[in-house]
Length: 126
Image (cartoon, rainbow, N blue to C red):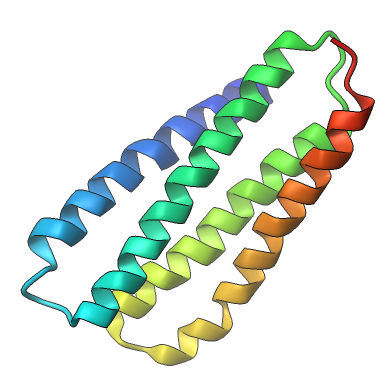
């Protein structure tokens, strides 16, 4: 699981940088300022959670017996990024505002990931 989380963190991080550059350069003249802000928010949250997932992978590699809650937190971050950032990218690129109903589900997964990570911290033995 450590390798999966580390790989996904690296992919999310790299795609976040690419998305930020794409938004700043290729999209600037093609979509509205508001759509650009939405796109940027997706890229920013993707990077934040790539780093969080990286932290989880590092913790898992250091712990003799990582708590299950640590794994759950990692998966919640992955699902949250895909749903939250993915829906923001789709909204900004397509203009379909009804996709905004999906974003909160991703946001809930991200918040749950942080909550479960906090619970994990209490059960970790270093």
